[in-house]
Image (cartoon, rainbow, N blue to C red; front, side):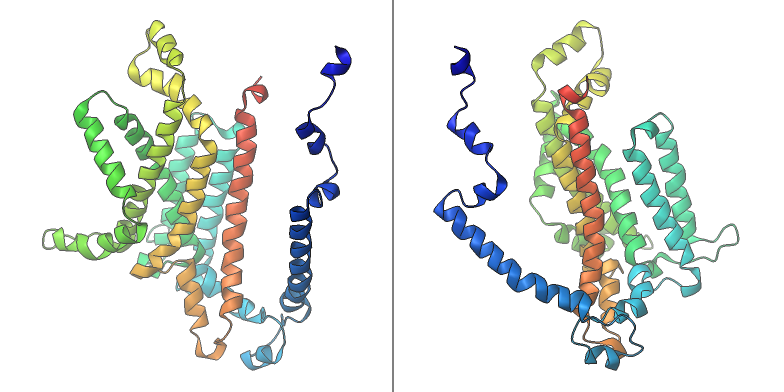
Length: 360
């Protein structure tokens, strides 16, 4: 019996093989391994040569950069402030830099368990207010800067941060409304979610930029940046609602019955018993939505908002430094990758913390 119980199944035996042996375990795997190795040998050395070995990091002019056989990173050194801060006044660019650092620090502190207490919401309010003061100015001796001059990475971070901060609670409320037993509330939430999920974000941005002003009373106007921010919040909230609804459906009925037996009301049941479990289940999909939201902020360039992508296009348009679009897009692509990779790594850590065996 003992010998029979210790006998491993064929799948278990295969899974214990060495990684190198798994690469050639079947003829198809061997063929794919050879093809991938060939592609790496053909592309990696050439990419390293172009990116680093043959690149020009210190050219003073575009002509010197064009003479190099590799990448022209001197273009990034020349235009990095335009790409990162857009057309924000040059002498005041320390303000968007400080606002960006403040937003990133706020998000990082929110991810650390030691800071998750009753003061976190207050810190969010204070930090967002400070970021707004730094960007707008007009107080404390800071020169006023209109938001049409905002751009680059700080604007992208603000659109993403305010988008998540506004869309998450709205999405949770929509998820609860869609599961409500009140027909009117449920119908309104269903119509909203299905309508928003049925159109692309770019359509909402165009409607907020072009069509919404036509329906406003004469003399009433809403700032274009605010309209874009509202469109992003409304769009992300619909997807968050469906994800949270999936988590709510995964909660066993006994959890509701246990809360009812303790005499808990609806909101206390949801806030203390159901929602924490539901959100823990859908951490991965929620983080995926947040990453998509961060990348989708680049679409605001279509309605004339000077985000990170639009700032890179402006840098490329300089007649003296034309022809280096690859370097510019690699640079902003690297910025997007760093932020998205950090978010995804935190998501994996959070998922491990939410496992039942890790909670005990």
